[in-house]
Image (cartoon, rainbow, N blue to C red):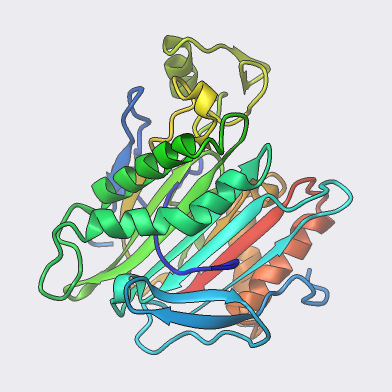
Length: 342
């Protein structure tokens, strides 16, 4: 299925002092559980060399799936969002290969007004991130469609379905023997209409991140899973690992991932999840790997993208501009960005 799809979701840690999620408290979970939180209901660019263009395949079971081709993709009619796009860069000479993958699926599950976006940041190779690109959204669809309503939209708890999809994908990676010494982060957002309201369901493991612009103010919808986090440090130690130099067993900075089958006792794949009610003040969403967040704060990225969109850039062009800006700020990692406009 090539490089991109529109389909499912994931999440990370919240910014200091600002959080659009209810009670501003999305706590970490106990060893084998995912955290969840629900939002309040009332509530420098150069050329675009990193832009990618797509041709599409419509699969009525999955949705509108984008693959690399020769045509610029078009947002389909009745999409859940106004515009979206993404960009990637290997970031040579700091990295020799691209281990990130990106997934976008519009009309997810064949349902208009439902779309899935994901960034997977592989490490120790690309096999786990590629597996997630090709399978996590299918596992989510399977979990959601166990009890669809009359419109074909799942009546099950979406956050529970996201957790099930992550754990199923993690199990499959282990069964396929892809991830004994490698793994991937994941951040996913499922945007869907429910009655007359629109929500974004976010899930994540690791330090890839989802940030929304609410009237120009950055709110993190995910939670970073890092060994330096006190809750994660306690969980890791209870599971038999140790933390040295803010790294799990002195090696990995992240404390949760998909893959790493040989270390599953403590590098769990249980995601953080959140549900956020969208309103007229929500402008756009950024999903990106840590190659961006290592050199830009949440508010920095929102300010940057907001300026580019106001200057008339498309979501694809703004994504490319953010990738290039991260390179100019001396990011040393692979770079992947998705921008979604509401």
